[in-house]
Length: 77
Length: 77
DNA sequence: ATGTGACTTCTAGTCCGTC
DNA sequence: TGACGGACTAGAAGTCACA
Image (cartoon, rainbow over the protein chains, first blue to last red):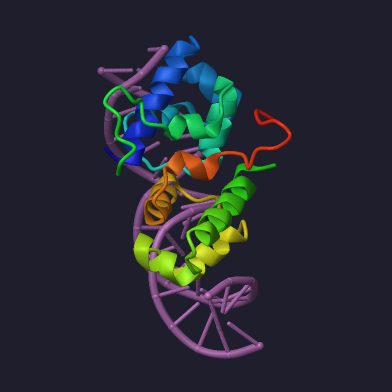
């Protein structure tokens, strides 16, 4: 499991949990709408700056977007 | 407190806690020594890919490098 | 062992669309 | 509402020499 995939999955999950469309989150985080779409599809490796802006738009902590969804645990590494 | 500063501080703290020099960590994470130096000095906003490689070199989770050093509450936003 | 300037290459990130 | 493409620019990634 690569970090981009973890991030992409967390981003989508938290966004949907917040009931936001990619477009609304894009507006809140001041990030391009098509870029968020790409991030959720693992096209890019975002910088911590956008991770932070996204987290703020979702009302969560930046670190939360990099956490493993758990369930089968993997912290090991 | 910006995310780069939090990351820079955490990187340096965890690196020193692990007893590693920038040079040794650079070797473990396969990242240039001078680039790590720059990151610890907030010159760049690292991508989650390098955050992850650095975390692995330190034996910790990528999310740990984005956590607030605590003290005086988090969630600043 | 680390900081820093200069430099080049590559990708993140934006903006325009269409399906 | 979101996937996806093209074209573009800003800035990260990576390397070197020297203090």
